[in-house]
Amino acid sequence: MAHYVDLSPCDYFTSDHGGKLIAVGWLSRGHAYSKGDISAEVFARLHQLLVNPWQPCVAMGAHACDFHRFTDGPCQITLDNVTAQLGVSNLFVPSGDRLFVAPSLILHYIDAYEYSPPPEFCDAVMACPEMRSMDYLKLVRKTAPAALFSGNQTQM
Image 1 (cartoon, rainbow, N blue to C red):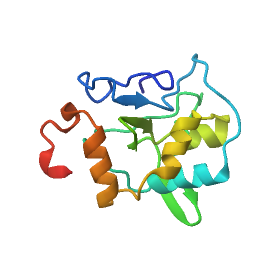
Image 2: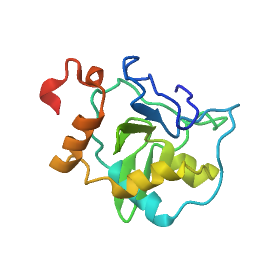
Image 3: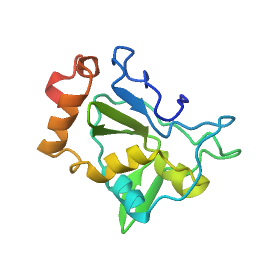
């Protein structure tokens, strides 16, 4: 998986993003990251958003946790009898005039490695409308760079 420093521009999906796609949680071995506590509410909301996340495109294949030596790490996290798949999706969280982008492995990084996402990302997660709701889709459409939707006009 690609590595991006938190809050840096994310060109994983398109290089033509005008600084609107902001990376959060793109961790990898050998790179420092923020550690600390986050609330159970933020973790639960992240989990909820990652159960069936909207994405502008689908990648073929999964990303493994780079921190595991002998396995690929977990492929899912179950919370309150609801399962979110890990390593197979990305989360797009609108916030003002930008769109945070996090890999689904962010749940594992928080749970297993004490990763602490930036506070502005946590605030955006808590304020994010329900995934795939009309309010969510309108915010994404308003915030995202046009290049993110090239060839995907009907999938919104």
